[in-house]
Length: 334
Image (cartoon, rainbow, N blue to C red; front, side, top):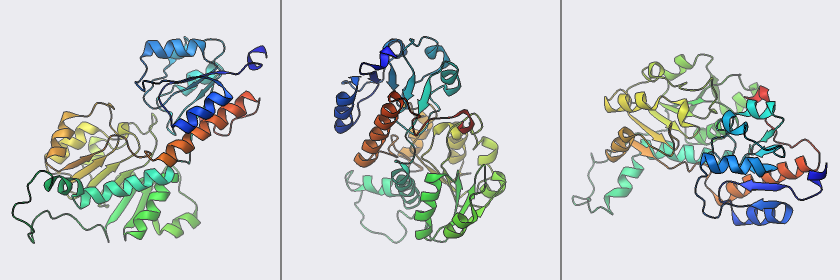
């Protein structure tokens, strides 16, 4: 086609690592977002009317209404990120627009952050880190002060045993945690045996028996509020909830209410339902040390973000060369 004889116009919605942006400029007619501010829906609409390829991130809502405004040249949405719940993939596919993501490259970093949150919440690390800078350590060390919880010997319930869930399980096993998991499908026996992992077909039954719950599943219509108020009430009063996946998987208001009432011990959250807005109730709980809140830092390493960018480039280049991109999203994956 004549449109492929020129360099494709690639519109990138947020700042990417310098090496990634430089390579994109070399390969494509690339329009960058130098200000790094999220694009408005009007700006996104203008972009998809012109672009051959759109490179969005989790901060961009690519819904059916927006896709209805797409220009005839838009044939690929190469998402910078693993999750695609911010993109109406079905609507894109109906319009003949391919959608890709960047799986695998953020697995280890997100698992690291999940383990860090488990430790931070259980051992009150964020709370303790504020004490000396705030000049609150006037009495010195005391045998009964700032007591947290030992994690060795506790039961960890992993909700979603994909790449990240398995990477977390490997780390948690090394810390002496007992591994339990719930997943749409049971993982192969050799993986279970290597992790000493116990499978629970019933999420309810697992939640009632574990000490720590980690959410590591994607946000889909089926997982929206998977940890509902009813399910959260199944947890032990001393239980800890950690989420580095998507905020929508947990009923955030119910979680805050149960922590306030002492029905759940604490939580560590890297993602939120109305991100970037954070519930004032959660902020208040963070100030009292009941919750550790992070600003979506799970994959925030130089290595991960560069690897994600390289996957985006491979997907674009492969698609524009007339081949099937390696990270194409299929309806069966949603």
